[in-house]
Length: 91
Image (tube, rainbow, N blue to C red):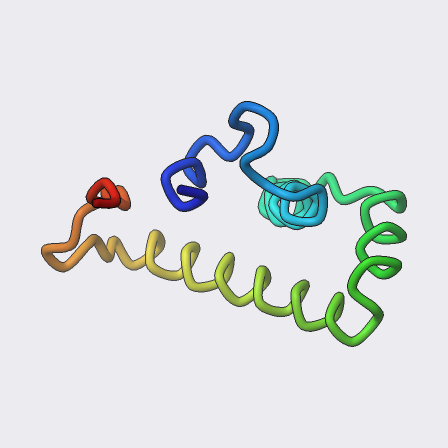
């Protein structure tokens, strides 16, 4: 159920935990051209995750941003995959 909401990750209350929302907000803030990460985001994430996990999270977001920008610069497009995650309903 959570995966369905990732593209517009601000769904109605109750889909994501507070920590999940904070992580997605942080990823979005890091990805802005002119990052918009705040000291409050950083403080809360370090408090919730610990420093080591915060560093790992930050590195993974940075790697995915790099990959996305490189692919865009090279004009790389999908290789037959869909541009959206479409999940079949649960039985």
